[in-house]
Image (cartoon, rainbow over all chains, first blue to last red; front, side, top):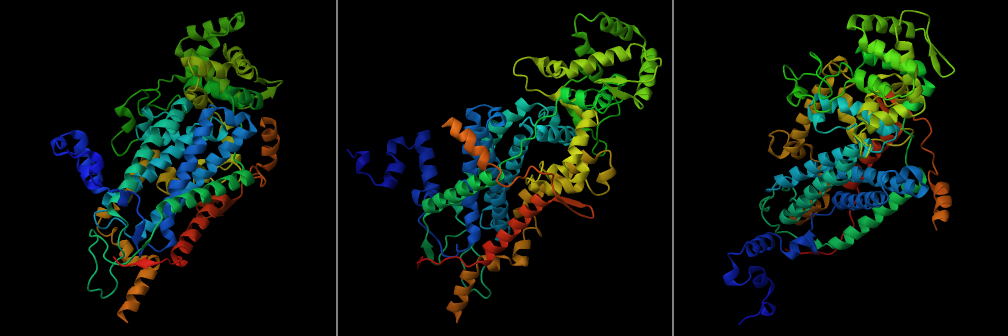
Length: 533
Length: 63
């Protein structure tokens, strides 16, 4: 009987004849039939693979390794470690800079592959998986930004929610829930990106790198999907990978040491109440009267007829309805006040307010709102001219005091119990006022300031969001009430076009027309010219 | 070890302080931070160099 040890590799892969119907045997034959070891770990490349542009794929993978390693170290000590310790902050810096390098290299890799028309020769899926990996990476980076719980993440999440909500995605993907975002950031999206990149790399190994366009007047040139029949050169894939890792790790450490990373403290309701009590009380009064953004927002927070953005006649958020219920008057004002014990005057004020009819409530709110325009902050409180405001001054004074001692924030976050990572309510309340927006404006983070791309201070931000940010600056989007859903629709359309470049006539012909490939494969064309002479 | 790290890291971290107020370039409707602009310029520059610079040649073999 022949033992497995006596067989050569092909025979081992094929297995014994009686096992050929086994699922495992079939999978092994299929896998190794397509991807034998010499393809998975090649030591030869076609000689035309002779340009620096080819190193950016492996540099991207090396940067991804640095991202995963630094992220894993951050995960070891929990989400708040890096905010409170210098060594944690340093690891966070390595995470930030490895992400910057990852995108830097990946974009150059994509440009290179576009100008090579690298989808030729049955390599369409290689291009598609690469583009999907790029887009999924943007999503992963975005969830990283919004799960930091610092000022940057507060602002980005309060702004980013509008686009997501307008497209209906916000019903399932709540960027104001930092716990949910952290889970997406450290598990779900990296898993998706990782799987897509593994598939992408296997497809590169399966099909090999795309052939150059045929030289002028070439009589024989291998078909795009045929094996290369020209010269080959030595190629040590492990050496290349190791060198890329060393380069990326050195750059990451260097940037982290020299530049560090931003971490502006989060803005709290307490800070708001202490620094701008008039704005706080004005906003809280607006929540009661229903005049704030949150009160009239619509889906996914509440059902407000006529609210929300539409794509033509379609309201995408209404597909899912109210999935994150928020009643600003009750949630931000009345319920927190009702939790304050041992304050008879407040209890009486609440009874008066709740017992009044809506016309009376509106009259008090209207009078008080007008008076707040000329209000003054005195000794941490808010003073308005005497008037008929009903119980509102007592209620607002109590709410201000509650926020001032930190109780309001705790009350809004702890509403669900357990981890206390859902900041939907305090952030919606905070974003309804002017205080957070004024701070964001100072840091050039407003939408009108191309803020989506920016980081605090002089740190590079998400430069790869330039096109998304651009649409908001130009008409008709800049003044449209449906700007978010329109911009999102355009970006989704453009993303689909980018993914499907290989099958779109005209677009797929651009690389051949612009001839950047002549520079990429200059050595090959030069050799061919010499051979002709 | 932990104490040493706590002392050394802040000393090295942020040798160049990027936490100062940001600088921006405004041209018409475009407003971009200097940091982002540098990253984009660097990206284009690296791409151009990657396609233009000669690649070191190694021994080649027939098919």
